[in-house]
Amino acid sequence: MKNYLNQTDKTVEDELHDECGVFGAYDFDGNDVASTIYYGLFALQHRGQESCGIAVSDTEGPKGKVLAHKDMGLVNEVFNAKNLENLKGNIGVGHVRYSTAGSSVRENAQPLVLNYVKGTLGLAHNGNLLNALELREELSYTGAIFQTTIDSEVIAYLIARQRLKVGTVEEAVKGAMQKLKGAYSLIVMSPRKLIGARDPFGFKPLCIGKRDNAYFLSSETCALDTVGAEFVRDVLPGEIVTITKDGIASDTSLCQEKKARCIFEYIYFARPDSDIDGMSVYESRINAGKILAKTHPVEADLVVGVPESGNAAALGYSMQSGIPYGNAFIKNNYVGRTFIKPKQEQRESSVKVKLNVLKEAVAGKRVVMIDDSIVRGTTSARIVSLLKNAGAAEVHVRISSPPFKHPCYFGTDIPSEDQLIASGHTVDEICKLIGADSLGYLEVDRLSEMINGQKDYCDACFTGNYPIEPPTQDIRGEMG
Picture 1: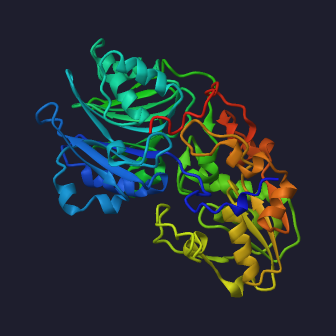
Picture 2 (picture 1 turned 90 degrees about the horizontal axis):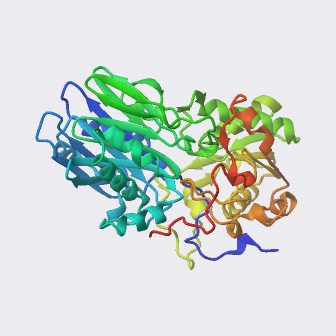
Picture 3 (picture 1 turned 45 degrees about the vertical axis):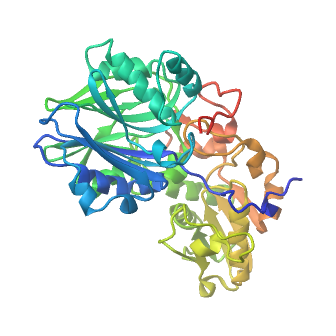
């Protein structure tokens, strides 16, 4: 039996990341949008902490002049008052990134800005293409020279090429979409238009907001709240929305019946104060906890959540079971997901840097610990150990998702099967490996109940039932 918990490589992370967050703005009154995009990206920081960027243009100024700034780091590290002040323009797009395809270097930061015969394009992309390698090769043979190793540049080139054949940018986006296979939520800035597009399966979220005489496109509704915008609606899977001074135009000709929205947005990725496709993320996590309490009850004294994504599910478990809900962990909020890991010879655990246990809260108690997932198992084992070292009499682990058994190819860095503890172990074996007194997962057939009976979601990382035929080799990171 392979023991995932004895791996000594501290660079191997035991947590999941989404690929990106995107945010766009168009102010019809001509006001600069860079600072608003900054705050929008700040609200989406949880979706990517490796790099970020903003590109803006003036719709009344010289056609094709785009001002941009991007770099490695968090939003508040990359931007300051001075460089935001220099980004003059009333239309713009922003991006936060965590790499699942393409290496983590400044060249791969987005938005991408492309100058071509018809002018300029600014593009931000969330997702992962399955056919990026084939498309890249095809474009290379017709003269394309790539500056990055990310699949988003393939999309930008396709749109630019299509634009030479059709009359409008939105038609070019549509032409490009017909060649793309995989997950993508896109925001495209042309000199006079802001365009949002979502792949026909709707893997990644995208929504529209409005504030006064300005429109916004965002990965999540929480960013609209942050900038004081009112939620208008979600972009439909397969829909292309074009925002101009005439309002919003919609093209739904690529929409299809089959959809596959990422279920893990509700379990972990999205902020709890967001709504995605008509469902409150917070409510979905409360529901998950309630389901766990019904399917995996246990006698205990306290229910606690592993911050932050486990908290709402823990509250739901408490509400359903009647076991008191409490705080057992103090989280260091100044530690990002990219902090420098302790070296092997140092005794500091990366978990201890992020979390500390309130001994008074757990000492002598039977504790139900709720977390959103177990990937390799190393983090879960350390947290169980922290609770027991603080005096917890028993630790019963409940997970608000089913066991991860398969990799994701659609923009989530769920690793290959040989790195997933649930792929090669039974629940009882995992329970022993992480040192818990009992372990229970959310069952796959209860996922729909978690989102109030909605269907049309992707659960391939749990079931292996991919909505699109997966690649025969692991393509993630291939272009890096």
